[in-house]
Length: 93
Image (cartoon, rainbow, N blue to C red; front, top):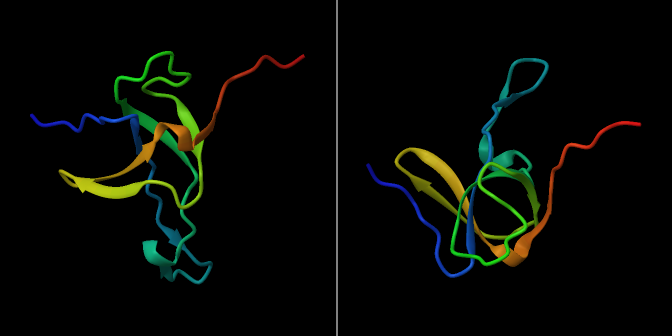
């Protein structure tokens, strides 16, 4: 089995693919859809004191990273510094 392991302060992200279609049933291709800016962390390079972990949902800079396809799955490889925030659960008052 092969896996991608990021190096040089990179983070491997996976965003859920969703097919969009109009109310009339016309499918909108990926190239015409707005790219998501939230994704799930799949792997990290050896980053000391990282504020994110594998499995976290994060928000990253628009136009950041390199899109890659590996073994039929689409990923985004972004520099650690381009991760702007992570989604966290909070207790409501």
